[in-house]
Image 1: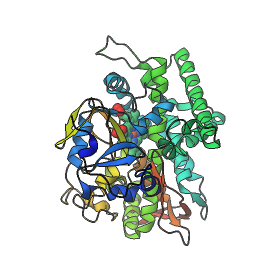
Image 2: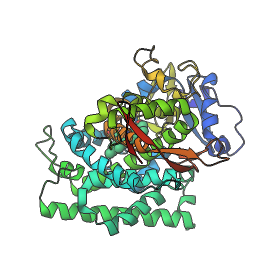
Image 3: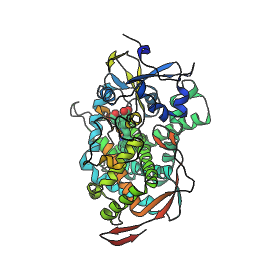
Image 4: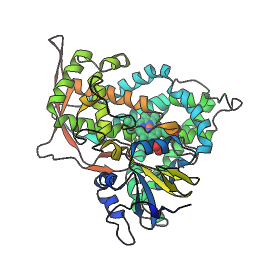
Length: 458
Ligand code: HEM
């Protein structure tokens, strides 16, 4: 079997560090520079080679063959430190199918009206407290909304308000510095730096908080119609009706928190930034939400009519995919796109890279929600993968979309968020999710119009 040496190497590798500097300094530009060099391109993380998949069809093949392209590599090594080996997003292939069967009922369509109700309430509570002229730190505000939604839909009222704040703070600490830690080889990641210590403390406290909630719920034995109740009640029909162990539930709860909170918050923050830069699209969106909502908050029943809102969210997922880069460990010698990959190698796939390929999208850097208008020719299949594909596809895709559409519609029905004078292009902060580094916006009131009449002034 060949070694990875036969693959084209990304340019500008430096001795000892390889491509570490562009990966840390400007990874998005680095990713976009790779496709001209081949469908598979070798990059060096110091001495460690990684194989970047640059082609949409090869990405699909790797995602579908999750036995050979298993969860592993630097991203999942870090995720497993927090989530453990039993987490749905990070567990190996050997454990995955059973866990997925057990978790899937929590996302049954019949549960969505209930989740959407909790989402609408959280969104209303947060946005209803905004005041005209107030300046928001948008990523933080969105993170507050989505983590409250995750807490409300996961374990309804089980977390008293006094305990929710510290949990949310620990979630944020976990995300801060995640991307940088990915590149820290042991023992650097164990040095007692303030960042490493805060990270370890946050993940210990998070686990303790969630373990206590699960223990209380087990004792209570009551169905609260939330995600946690669904996990506790789950039985695997293919496995003698065995349910989830406490450790598996705990890992899954932490996984939902980590996988669902920052991603959706980043998506909303980018959407608000992009709308403020595209006033024509913002005006059309306002017309849609005025017509559909008439100044009220968005509910589950409104979703089918919020067509442009959906397209704005989809286009934001394309342009700024919160899940922007992931790794896989190759578990057996295999072939991908005519290349031989030895067992033990690590491959990387990136929704961001695929979404920005100029041969797949006209003007890929342009924010154009109308490219998702079904009346227009649609981009090729597999060219859009914000939620991945195959058996490891995001279990929370509909949940995240529902949350984002309800939040964006409710926010834009009442408010217009404007950049502060002098706010230039927003740079991304690199974490597990791609989110705006710094984005402050001012809240301006809007007037909602329905059937030509003013129905509500914010
Ligand atoms: C806009 C929001 C979201 C985005 C962009 C997103 C994106 C993704 C992506 C790209 C993956 C695949 C990761 C990989 O290939 O390694 C994934 C997996 C996953 N996501 Fe999401 N996600 C979102 C929201 C959510 C929500 C709300 C939840 C839970 C409530 C969630 C739970 C999960 C889980 C558990 C997995 C692992 C699934 C499996 O391996 O079976 N995600 N997500």
